[in-house]
Image (cartoon, rainbow, N blue to C red):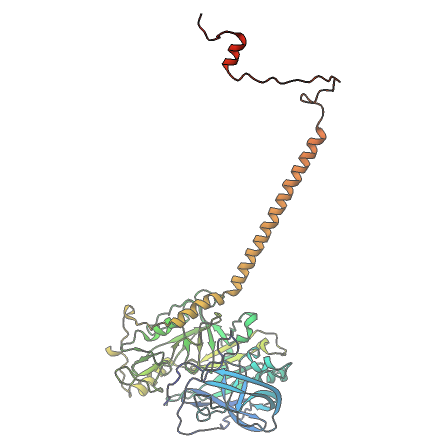
Length: 541
């Protein structure tokens, strides 16, 4: 049973602009602690992946000769461990990785590193000496560190150290083995599903035997983020146009992407094995759970609660292929949550995205473990390998692992004790007009407003530059026009001066006379006239 002190994902803020990286969202109570996994394949590049109640997935690495269980995270790029590492060399650099549940802080060391048959002589990592700040006991939950498999540009250690010393572990492996293909694959198991035959496995540059068909799946291009924020580059892909998400009623869930460069009708999804619960737009989460009879929004959990017997259909479409989500993954009985009346409930696993919301508008949703359990995932790093020889673009391939008919039968056996009640009236969806909507917080509204501005900064900058250029051009044009007018006036004046000669109003030649004209004053009135002529000129005769 999982406790629920933190329903939101364990977020790592690498910079003021980074969106998220790693997520260790829940405190897990386990009956027994395990530290090492037994290899299940003779292929050295195939590693078994452990599962802690569908909340954490881990595997083994060797660091300084010590075997360490680490959480596998495709959403970050750093390596950190707790405890001691024999023979580790201190680089003299310290680093603090701030998480929602505490800080992973320590010095940056280097030591010989091994993973899946690959060796790196001097791998940089953070040695976390103190974990008391964590609100969860990571050792009790089955791991003693974390290894990130995101792009190298997102590594804090890489930014801290000079040269190639700080490159991520997977980047070092690909850089040293240039003849191998730069890809990893990941398959996650599902606990609580007795019929499932899927076992957790992780590979480097090889395919899990029996799943070779993954190489025939569509190559989904990685959506690149803006160059100035490439530290936020994640494994993100586009959903299919207009039918990216098919909801419980079999109809597409409509959503307008916040990513400025996303094509119309498509959304950008990040694939992140570090997120226990997928993070989707609030309107999408509401469309998934809001029409379920008896559904209730939990303010404390910030998630939907639904009856455990409610089968909810959900499918994602990428590259023209449908990827149905197992109904045991759409809602979970692992968290011990209850309705407001005290009756047991199941948690809606596709949460409204809030704390992981992208202020730069780089993605719309984060598809974590509850989605990734339904696919065999291949991530080809391509030219994102720092110092690598590949010039090809990175891409993702997904092979569906969920058979819809078998999944329904699994759900009936697990949640309904073998009784097929999924078509009964109590589990019928409400009309669309009666869909419930979860409340949006003031913080979310503020974040959305900020995103509208920040995510469009290239366009705003371009617009400002255009305005400045137009103003400059206008000023130059006005100056040119003024100069032309002045030039024309000057030319006209010079032309007039050159053509001027004696005319009808020219000054008379000087006659040499000294006589002058004396102006006589005008008479002031008729009285003066009368006096002068001694008569009344107006008198009648």
